[in-house]
Length: 265
Image (cartoon, rainbow, N blue to C red):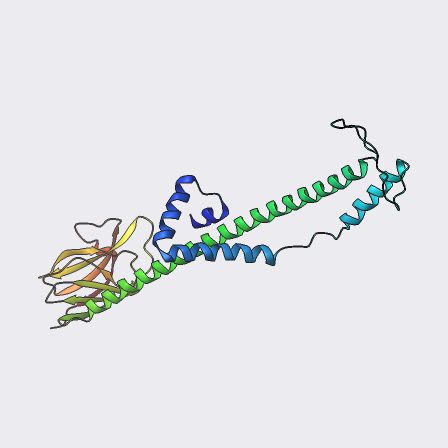
């Protein structure tokens, strides 16, 4: 909105809103001034001098030619011609030179306006591109910050007293290595996947807690950064992971058992 305000493209409602906020907040006023300075700096840095043209000399030469064409010596003073009061007569010299000079000035003005218009649009496009890049950078920084905050929170939870570390190794014929962190006090379960083959399309890994030899669903493994937090588990003699249909299964497919590990003690 500040960019549109400075470039004169803002609607009356937007201009009124910016005027209101620039009067209330010094930060907005500073941002407007900075935007104006950036635009001015850009224009001066990319300005090109117009071709040199002795317009004034050309104008005098054309005027002299017009005077000579009417039989008047340009070197001497122009003789006074009596004029009836409030009655206009034909001029004593041709206005062709004046018209030509005016035409030259008009063409120079038009060319300058076209050049400035083109530069304005290039500047506008460059500014919009820079603004989009800045937005993407800010969005990327926010995503990284959120991910780091989540991982830090998970690490703190894993480090709480009462947390057990259970290593799940691959069963014969299958490859895999997974670590389960289970807290006896708050029942939280975190899974850190060191190595598991990518799940095929339509399939998903599922964690099971074995209680008195019976499997209990402990949640599905997602594509989570760092540790995956799964369902709370109150009791467990062992943990295992199987490959099930996407969304999970009420009972494990033991032919798709990948890793398993007992709870020590």
